[in-house]
Length: 91
Image (cartoon, rainbow, N blue to C red; front, side):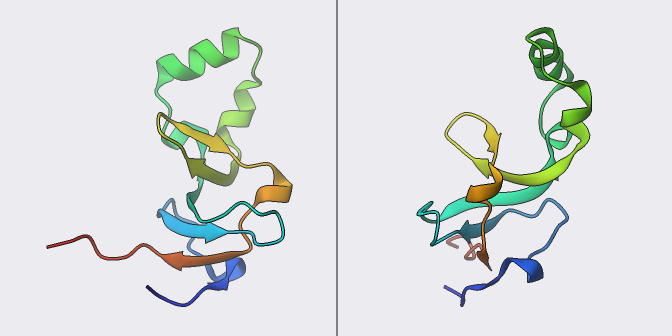
């Protein structure tokens, strides 16, 4: 594994990285800087808008963490403060 680096040096192009925020106690997370519209389908966005979500919120870039089914926008106090690239996959 690589060394942890300040989050300000992380890629902001949708690349998945490892992130953590030791102060928030989030542990190591799979994260990426993106907008929800980059990975949600139109149908998923339509459902969320019908449930009251602001359509503009899907275009706002932010830190997102992967979970087992989808992903979630991280609350500001859980934003990663450190990052490192993902390891190479096994050959």
